[in-house]
Length: 426
Ligand code: CMC
Image (cartoon, rainbow, N blue to C red; front, side, top):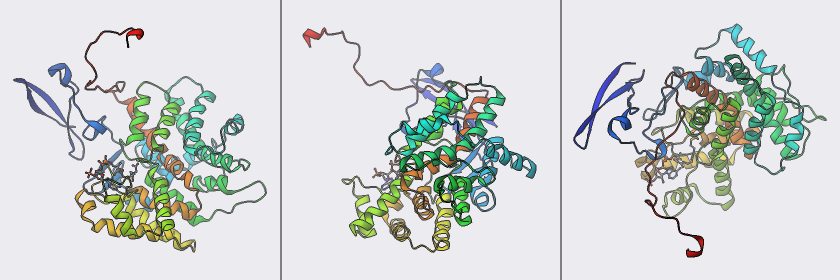
């Protein structure tokens, strides 16, 4: 990293601040000494201009619609890689050779079981609970079963456990919600097929995994695997910066992902498409409502804090969606409405002006629905995909020599000093 400097002046004093330049020539003002040199803090609601770390994991150019993991374009990885290979790439920085990948696969598949006590853990939660808080609680609870002291080796073991056990946790959360017996993992299957098996098999009936469905799932997991400093990843880093363990940090990340403006949007997209169909509303009428500032409706799955262009993941998913729906011999009303909404919005001045394009969630819900994944599990699928991203970002943060606990400042706007009023005088 080359370093240049820039100067800002405040109340007649000049403060010299270094510039940090990234490998893609992204420039950032290093303000780490700003307060000690000038008394100033920065104010940046939603952290839209704040670089919270230096990272070598994922590169996004939102203006150009570029996404790369460790330098590899997402389009190429989506076409040629597998989810477990992506896990390795994100966590260890390079693509694995055949032997390392096969070893990793074996290792992951040997850690897929949950402690038997989790059966009663799930059973103690309400059946109608959303699976996101159920999975967040279960991941947090893993740290009560694995209490070893944190070492480099234990971090690697935790990494394997989280990737291996999350599909079991997700499928068991679903089985609990529908009152079916939990299905144990099947370690001879590939990662995505094993998840589908635990979701859809029952003790009385085997489930034959459709390769088109498990390939589509693997693709979705790849596309969700990392997205640099988004809300849930920043949460994982912030929680981990207090030296909380990986389970606790990732449990917090799952909770952050649940919100409708983040990972929860995939569920909201399908609900929006269903509501449009149910009301018999035209796509044009819905877009008009989404533009109306007095109406809370938003075109879910559109817009992104970083992408001011077509989200490259949405591009991959749009074509995968059409293929999967066709290969399963389905017709999808939701897909039809989604494509119509997209066409109208992309030609509409409101969306053009604000640079609002389809994001990853616009088509992911439609494809999950076609695959038979229940709507309330969509965000859990996102969490499964994001797991290696959260883990690699957490590990990078912990190894960063400039690591410090995350602790933002504020601009205080409350009352100035005043005296306590006794209760009888209030
Ligand atoms: N429909 C209608 N108007 C929108 C939309 C939308 N989907 N998204 C943004 N706008 C408008 C917004 O009202 C605002 O208009 P104005 O300038 O007149 O006030 C302008 O565009 C800028 O929006 P913002 O909310 O200030 O932008 P942001 O960067 O803070 O928010 C976002 C980004 C993703 C939260 C937002 O675009 C949104 O709510 N989209 C719908 C939810 C969604 O699809 N979320 C998934 C994000 S991708 C998956 C992930 O990474 O989690």
